Image 1 (cartoon, helix red, strand yellow):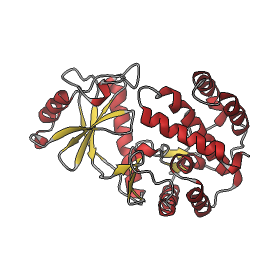
Image 2: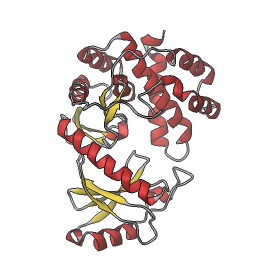
Image 3: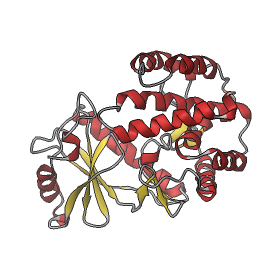
Image 4: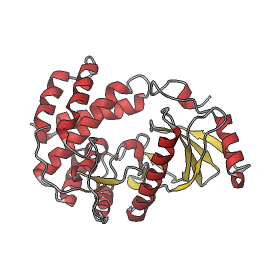
Length: 306
């Protein structure tokens, strides 16, 4: 059984067993027959990850969805990840191949290049001024990518803050006993009113500890860039609160030249993302729940909200 079969992360989660992955890889990609294969424990929640030899990793979606939709999603992710890798200041995985369902696993799956390093749930860069400078360089590079006429689409993070009111109400309800809901509700009522002051730019969209690789206090790589797309520039500022303590946060803000509203909208997106993760993963993924709780603690202690 794989690690994700021990405690399910999602109600619609599918089983991903190592023996099945071995058969799928060997049958569909004969060039990799015989390469060592092992499951990797990660801080992620969307895919089960299996190393194939030293340079590749297979990613198997965990939530059961129609196969055609998953294949289209994986292909779109691959294109976005390639665009991100071309602009990134640090290494990032790129799609190598798409696999087909089989042997009881119901969806397509992907193989990508492997980027070595410890993610920030393992190697905390919170007090590193150098990491903050590296992060500013990455965000600046992403913002410099040609938009090619693209704009934000949908109702997810990076668009209109009030679009998330219904989800936030669910989070407040399910966070009773875990968080200071009364205070957090008041904070959201203020943050959701922030005006939209910036044009869209290209953003990673999910700069969380599980997606950032750290080496000796420096930014060493970025994972899960399949969501690289136009959004509110403040969206990537979630990294300030997910990853950095107060001093390095100041370095990041100064390096990026963030205005007051943009910076506070970054707080809003980090707040929205974190409050959902605390209760949703409290039992199934304590590491993720804990870093989200830490993010909220940083926000609650910040001078910006006093």
